[in-house]
Image 1 (cartoon, rainbow, N blue to C red):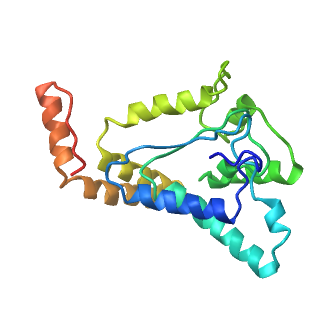
Image 2: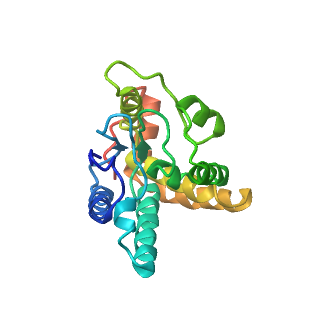
Length: 215
């Protein structure tokens, strides 16, 4: 993301481009890992573009926010695997905070937005707003390097299994344990007939690295 002057604020054009990009990636069988990165120093996303919002009437504002929510849902559930990278802590209203699946994450994110409070990486980690916090490096891309390292771990894995594991987690985390286990069972049932599952078992028995094809 590189809206330098607007600090990656989410305006109509930016959101439209993001939705088109996510749709393209979701339908690309060769895309196994997606890393969202900001090229604006010190900022991941400043939230909604308030200069644009100020020019909207009530209906336009409602439709825009609905589209923004749809984008966050699309990122969270449609992409093969989403990894969100931020540079120097979270800004109030940051795009990353709005797509956290856990209730506590959403609650804390909203509280930070309402109070206008900024938090550093370690505090965000302790509050459960982020999964990892790393010390910044001289080039200012420590979080991106960490995300890229994690992406390299995910990439060799069976793409269908990774996608369905993500689906099971995203859907299961919002329901009770019994329902979550039922979701996990349905997802695993879709993995059973795949060639990749057979390849994984064969590779284990033969003590060799698996060669997954996404089939």
